[in-house]
Image (spheres, rainbow, N blue to C red):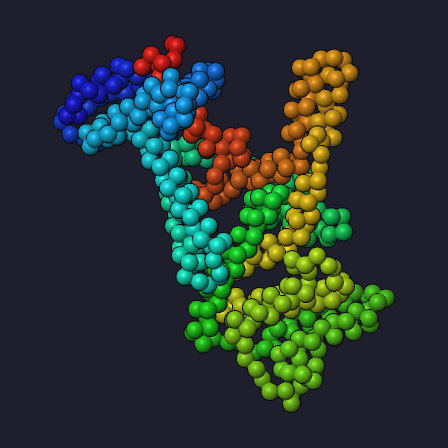
Length: 487
């Protein structure tokens, strides 16, 4: 590098960098091969920062609290001026790394892993800020308005920025490599079982319905609490908007299908009833016939409850089919709190399936997956609302905490009681559901490659925690070099 003496001075001040074997460049300018040679030592150094932070927690805490106090003091809060040198040291640290073009290339050449980590952190913060602004605009505006569309654009831009951050983040990639092999061995029943322990779906649900709720919950990352319900609402709106956009493109192209295609699954349901031999067969067939008549009248006009040669054909486009699908889903208890009679419920679901299939036939292939996710969320909405309401009503101390802390209380052993209390807290419904979501994310690492997730197990072993620990170790070493922490 042009200023080799400065780099060597920097390395001599940073023991972890020197011990890791980082080599400064010998020629003026940026040396690509020197950066490549320093990849391994730089990774070793940043791993050392992480280890330093987690093995010296009191010192790490002292450094973080001191630095935070310094910035608070600089913001005008009195009584913390003794901590300002900590903030100055942090500022100097980043100036040394990125305060000039030469400093930037010095850092990139001697600590490439750390430089990429810093860039990923910036991207994550910028992406989060852009997404937050977009979400605020969407919530504060009417659907379809200019502000709403701008909010959607900002939200998508923020997601794309964060995807870039995830892709270049060395900690993210390290976690994926570490957990990818484990995730490939985990069957889908494991995260579903953990999630079920927290959600406890109703016993009146069919096995298929339970499967849908559990799989949707872990795949979409919906916690059984108010924050999870807010996320579910946002996802439903997002998927709905995506579907509407694809449908509009189909309508603009002039595509349509014959309306009789909506009766296909109703006919299949009738055949199933006929073949089932139920003692309520005639009543069930009559209920399906009533639903068919209602559908016929809604499409062809009042009084037309049976289709024959006298009924003129009618074409429906994707938008009209989507309206039928949504109406059928609402009537079939997707998102409703009242349960319709079972056969009528099945008949409405049959109409919804037929309408969905025709919508997918008229639009681009990507609508199939989006429609599936949207339908699964709608079907899971009521069970998860009930689970969230039940959890919100729980007492501060749950039963596992009482049981596991009781032996210590009875024996007078405060430590054993506290440990039991903490372990019992790990068995709470929310933590069980969170563990299920985390394990599902582990499963998806080898199946989906680079993913856009905030943390792995939210927050126990997540990228955010690992990144924070790495910066904590880096800060600790920098403060020691400036005499602000004891060695």
